[in-house]
Image 1 (spheres, helix red, strand yellow):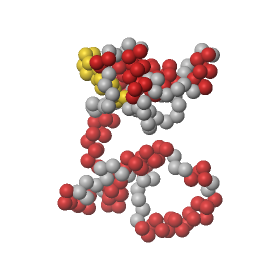
Image 2 (cartoon, rainbow, N blue to C red):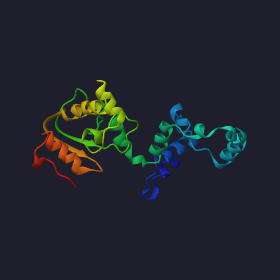
Image 3 (cartoon, one colour):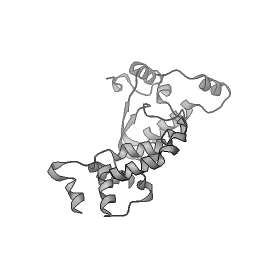
Image 4 (cartoon, helix red, strand yellow):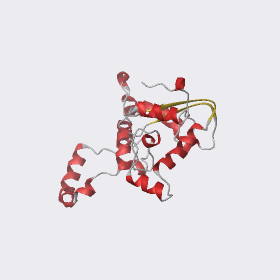
Length: 201
């Protein structure tokens, strides 16, 4: 316990990874299987593991060497300050002021702010840039439209409706885009908002 408390000595702010390593080393609590892979081995152990696995590592092809995106996300999360644990606990227990598109289905709030960005979107299932006219439709989008099939824009429009319709009294939308002028023009052309309601920064 003392080793764990020392991580905060002198006003320090340890990361989740440092706390995880300390708990593992001191055996203060059992490490869940899902986190065991992220426990940093001691230097001696790391060297032994590296030497033992060297021949096998050379045989692994380049594709297999690429770390799974889920593991990468966990590693990045573990490098963040442990002080964020309170906010994370509120989020996973549905007590946070923030949620995802899917997480707010069926809910309603007096005031809602929708934050939109395609920057970290994975895959091509959704695209607010296309919905808002900041990005051209792909050949596949056009082909799907002609064949009467669902498009990226269709899926994105439904998500947009879900989030915007959660607001009972007031709604604010913050949209990150490389072409804010196109987004504003589309919003006004579609009469989703009045001129005075759209501000570009």
